[in-house]
Length: 77
Image (cartoon, rainbow, N blue to C red):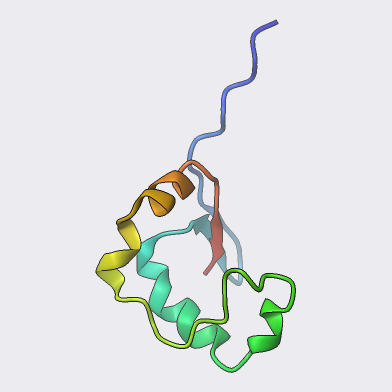
């Protein structure tokens, strides 16, 4: 049996919003949306909360971030 292929990128659009592949351009709005909600990091302590905004250009560099590109992360817009 041949293994299934990974799904390609897709954007889902609805009446009130859109779900699309997470991209660097979403960073500023996500930063604003989660500001002041430090409790959401309770079970993700290795990742945040972040005290400073990461410069946009640095989000696409580094070995760990390149490895994360293999994941399928989505953003509700």
